[in-house]
Image 1: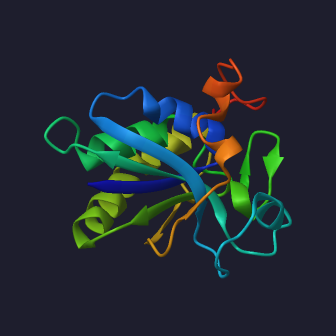
Image 2: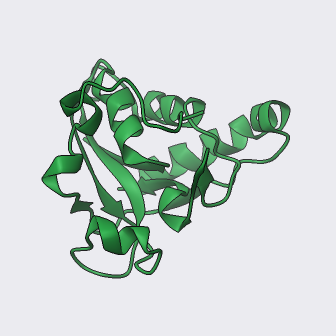
Length: 160
């Protein structure tokens, strides 16, 4: 099964999910934009509409989509529009890109369920987009497993 999320800088999100039991593979890339085959520089310009995202292949017999969503929402600030920590821009937005009706239903229900927790923790409601997955564009190879390749444990900006 496939899940696609955006939660700020994709390096840290990939690092987080790559260690989750039941996640078979991850790749970072660009989702939710208007142009085919965007580059990192084009996405960073803010003109493509893409978010830095992660595409996850997972085994639903080991981890559910709801469990993946819970990890996603608990490891970034879903109440800021187009920002995670010091990273600002549409490419850093919080988004769930659902692949079918079941994923959409689960994501919307869990988002609503977590609103009260978000208000207590951040003082604001969750603004995470829940939108259909369109084409996912794999990022340049140097972005794949970036933290692991560079012996880093986190991005320069923390996920929370």
